[in-house]
Length: 76
Image 1 (cartoon, rainbow, N blue to C red):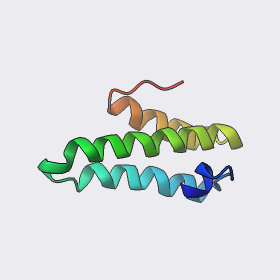
Image 2 (image 1 turned 45 degrees about the vertical axis):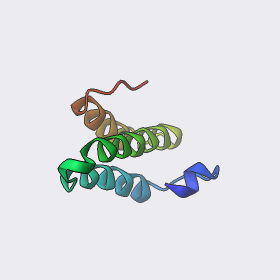
Image 3 (image 1 turned 180 degrees about the horizontal axis):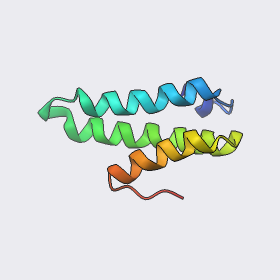
Image 4 (image 1 turned 45 degrees about the horizontal axis):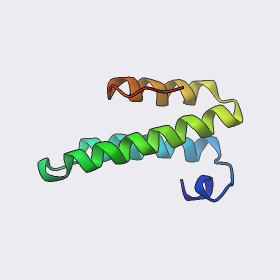
């Protein structure tokens, strides 16, 4: 995820790992940290979606969109 924020492109496996990290942030969040973890997951999924679309990887983009939909978050 850091490479994307520095202007570099992520590889498909890095995009997938970003999606997995978003899932884990939600799955393992404690009650006290649930809101923050949800926001982190949304940010990771938005990054994954943007990167997947940039490299033209529609299956990964669909995975990110599906998870954003599950969270009730809009996406482009």
